[in-house]
Image (tube, rainbow, N blue to C red; front, side, top):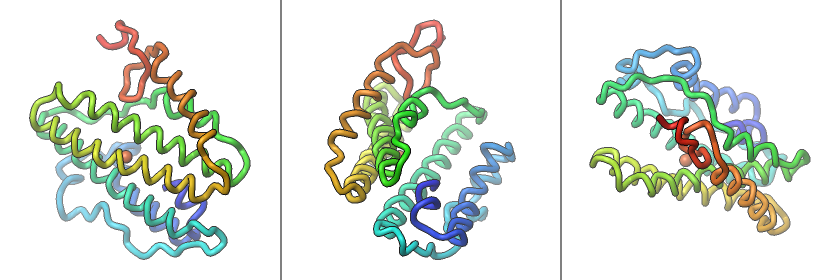
Length: 211
Ligand SMILES: [Fe+2]
């Protein structure tokens, strides 16, 4: 959502995106946590309330909008699906601090355009691809409902990482292979080195942290 707002649309359209995110943001950050109300069909979530107008000064606006809006929609939907499952299993929603993973890669993002955008898209691709891999690895160990759900998620993640990479290459005038290789090395370090914090994208768990 940040990338679409920063590069592809004007301020007015940006407000439509912010409005779209508002119920989710309120739920997570302002802690308006009536799950039943949040999940009720009439609550009008996951709908953009108008047409986004592409900025003409960026050649890839339309492509970025089209791919990212679909991705955002799916991620919001996944969030609701997770809440539904948690609700049905009597698990309370709690805020969780972000691990080191995404931050560790964002540190490597170059600070001039269009390199910043290209690198951020590559980072996005790694986050999605790693989710895809971990959902696949975990699915066989879960009960039927979660197994099915994880497999549906990994299918989306596989599409998401390809969307990010396709965008990165379309925007870059040179081959992005060297940047992908760079982030692959950084990412490998983050997922394989010891990590005290046990999260979906964490490194090798330190046993005491998992108990
Ligand atoms: Fe995703």
